[in-house]
Length: 235
Image (cartoon, rainbow, N blue to C red; front, side):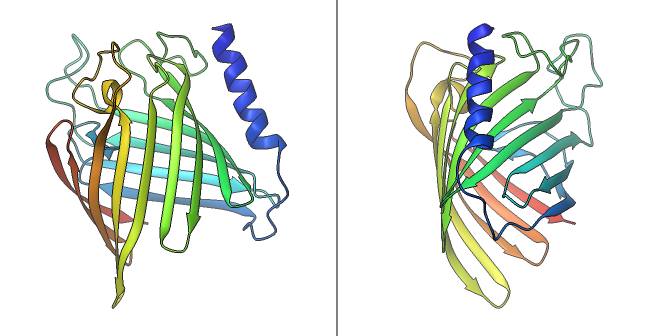
């Protein structure tokens, strides 16, 4: 637990304490919400239900941003992952602190996913509802890159994830991008829950097409051999 606390403190210091200010940052609050046909994250489905996903953030003049994002299933999970709780509905609340440093944005995210009696918001132990990730992202023109590693919390085992996306189409109000994601197989792939290997696998491929506030994403996880088609409306 002490090691985890030190890692989290170091990650926050890296995000908040370095780099020049970002003169182009849009200062102030931002809020919105998405409605999705199902919640698919990094090649895996989290909750087999449509969900509403609100978000709220505040950006300082320096570019430092603090944000909250959530996902709330509209229907109960079948079968329920919690013994004796037949009405379980997936929910998640994520808190993120991010800071642009030159062309790179560093971030720290706490993924809070309460299940059953494991609900303590401020417990970051191995049996908690929290998992903490440190990430870096880069975007230029049509290309986007990100890499993240879990550093603390529940069953994280230092799982890594890297993703690249590229805009392949833009015409008549439509845009399309292709995504390719690599991740720890024992966290994102078909070896979920097995921590005997550090194998990195291709776990997230797909194409997303957007127009106005609507997005449709065709997603395939080559490692689990599962595919998804997700519709999202943003407000």
